Length: 329
Image 1 (cartoon, rainbow, N blue to C red):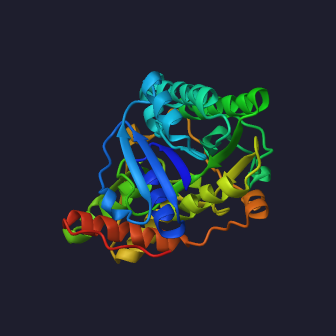
Image 2 (cartoon, rainbow, N blue to C red):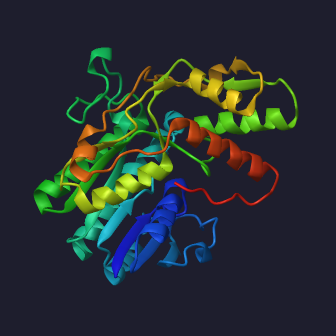
Image 3 (tube, helix red, strand yellow):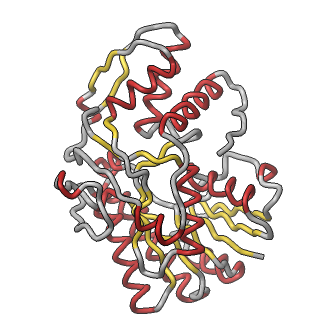
């Protein structure tokens, strides 16, 4: 029986990773830990043995006992404060729920289950502003985080490398770029666009799409490709190494809105809300995924248009209170 411990198991990526394990693995047992109850039924995952525990990773004694009793082979650390914009509003909360909880987890694993493999899921925000000549960004590129969130994520990386070097812990690190897909909260940019556009279509109106700065260019990757990458890194990633998880293609937010509106066949107007602008933002960030492709044989398979179509379908069904159909990769 292969055992996976997933922190943040009730979230967007956690749910998709569970779906992947359910569809693609056998003899799998999962312990999911999250501060929130899962908003989905365990019955959806009939091919894997799964247990959810609602707890805060800051509850050291409880978490340590859970890890000791379960003895996972793999630990997928997804629990985090994942909003760049929110990190400006509440940087203390960002550090508490990124750096502090990760350090607690490392200490708990070091004391109870040191031989397991940990996937330390990080962020491309650690790169900061990069020269155009340095695009697409490779893992050896220097880091220059431009937000409290980026600094917190880089701190997580440093802790991962420290515990790998000093204690010999088996830790693989990702710098994950912007992932999207059906089921993502409307608090995230592309999901917010999709929800606004589906509402415009339903109301047969020509309302404004409220945005921040739509000139920025990002590297978007489908969450279903992301979880496949994470699984491959468990199997084939190298201890202490950093891997970009990205599509390798950049697109502006304005062009994303254009694609969404073309798919829905609606006209649109953009209204920029200055409150949605960040104190500092990265104009362009596009990753290179050659390293993960070469070392694990993973490749991204889902085209951006397919991701956007599925996201629009999701919000159309959710808004109509109709269960979302299953999606096939």
